[in-house]
Image 1: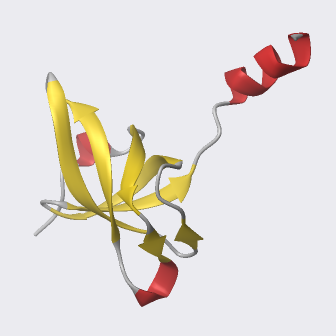
Image 2 (image 1 turned 90 degrees about the vertical axis):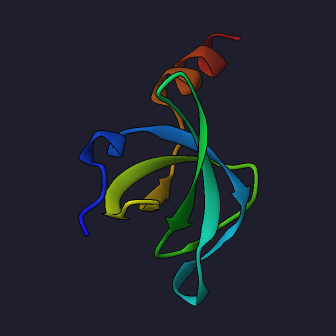
Length: 80
């Protein structure tokens, strides 16, 4: 079953760390006027509390994520 393609590009925060190929975590995404939890898969482990980007959907409630750093935050850090 294909996932919801509209989730691709969404930014979220990991509530449960991913373990890379060893297993998924859980990401909280702000969508549809609320916050929803999805099973989060990644190629490398990502720690709880880290910001992630949804790069693919696997099924209805499963997404692939990658660690994300907002490039605009980096620009602001350079100014201070």
